[in-house]
Amino acid sequence: MKGLKLLSTGGALPGRVVTNEDLCRQVDTDDAWITTRTGIRQRYYCTESEDAATLAIAAARQALERSGLAPGDIACCVAATLSSPTLTPGIACRVQAALHLPETCPAFDVNAACSGFLYAAATAHGLLGTLGGRYALVIGCEVLSRLMDSTDRATCVLFGDGAGAAVFALREDAPFAVTLGARGDDAIRVGGTAARDAAPITMDGRAVFRFAVEAMPRCLQTVLTSSRMTLDDLDWIVCHQANSRIIDHCIKHLHAEPSKFYKNMDRHGNTGAASIPIALHEMEENGLLQPHQALACIGFGGGLSWGGMLLTYEGRK
Image (cartoon, rainbow, N blue to C red; front, side, top):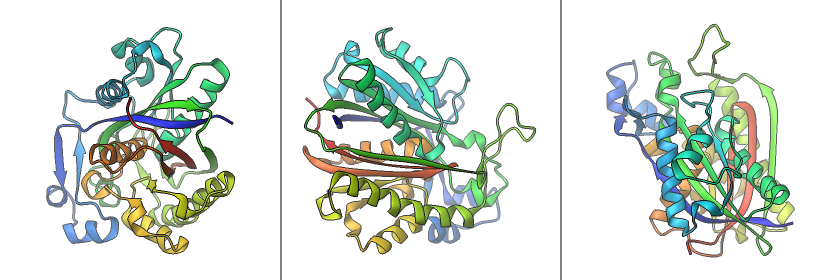
């Protein structure tokens, strides 16, 4: 089976930085309580002129420019989000128009909450295999600050806004594995247009923690087994950045090397579907990703949903 190689990344963060100290002035909490339980110290919120679409376009444009490809080379565009400013046009269609992608390029959004980027990448992999083409643009973007109850200290300290994008290439020589799954459960819930309570994010923190520490090692082991690889073969493991303690629990459970697990939730909080691509973009920006490195990306979130993907970083042309 042909696999995906990561060619380039892009990222976009909104203009407002919100620290733990800022939140202490709006809810009954403190910096030590937030940091010790989550590892989060700050996050970004959109300003009035920003939304998930503007962030997605900026991140996607950067990823495309850095790939060295032309807009006409992109065969599909898939955006993962639960916070699009409009139901239609979707964010992927807005990106298609802004970047002048060809009209033969299918563009649509998927919603698998914090697992969304992996669902979107797996969807792009399938589209390239069935419709043809070599390159896919995949985006994760969220504005979760507009879906929160700012008086609920159990959730308002966790989430932030941002976007990340990646250009993938379909290659014959690419080790590749993917696992996706779901277990219908409203332990994480966000109301929508048909819901009487319309928004805010609600979460059963203990249930989500139990789910996450079971799902993450299982996803990682599944893609390793499928690809006949071991932890020692991986250069990086990029998990959904929800909570530092969840990742630490996974490391301990797997008896893994902590330095292989990238963390950035201290600076961004939980950015939902944008979490993994933002992390990949930071890693590329900081020179941590090198050609031919093997990466495992692991996500979990509302749905409940989960996903894991093993791919290779190829780098820019």
